[in-house]
Length: 292
Image (cartoon, one colour):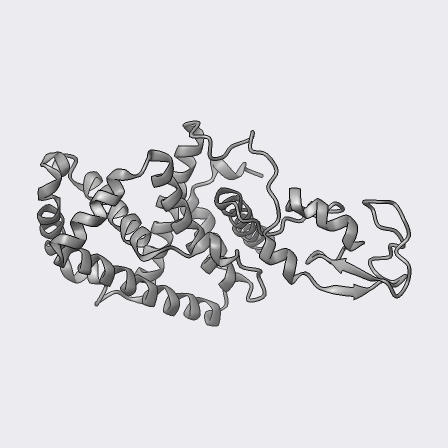
């Protein structure tokens, strides 16, 4: 099996999409189409208001490279959360604190991505003073206004835009991690489970039938029948007094290393990306099996 970082991101996403039912694909398309238009309306609002554009650009300039990276990472995380939600309707989404953004930050990340796109399209376009950037961006958009507004986009084009956005943001985050920005990589420490997720964990009565276990693997003591114990999404159970300190430091199950959502943006991106990649591997395995 190829390593995850050696497979093109678009290939992983397209392979995962091949596992979607027509209903899932339709829901994803409808949701992203609505989101796509809302984001473009915010961009048009920025461009139609010199003051709002100036304030947003000033906010961008005030951010460090690390914080610009964090903005894009949060934007990517929210899209990955959407994608995995439509993969599995019962997927536990990251808590709002990791995916929601203030209007000012959303405007900033949308403008930042647009500036990156413009720079890629015309490397010299932003050599002008920042006071001229709004005019330059307006001219860039005006060249293909119909396409930009997605008025004539088919469902396939909408999905391809979504995949392109995910791939671009993931490539950017990967580049920042590999550049040693201190935001990820193999040396990352373990992260705590999201407090919102911990609070939502169910409490069940211990029984001899729970996973076939009679003891808590953390303290090695018996889980007495009828006692309230914590059940993780992977169905392993533990004493509450044992699992809470564990989850305060880690977001993995002590038994099977199942990953729970955390409040760390980069850890969440990696967790959700592994969910997508696992589905992609499953799709490829089925495809190979069908060919044999």
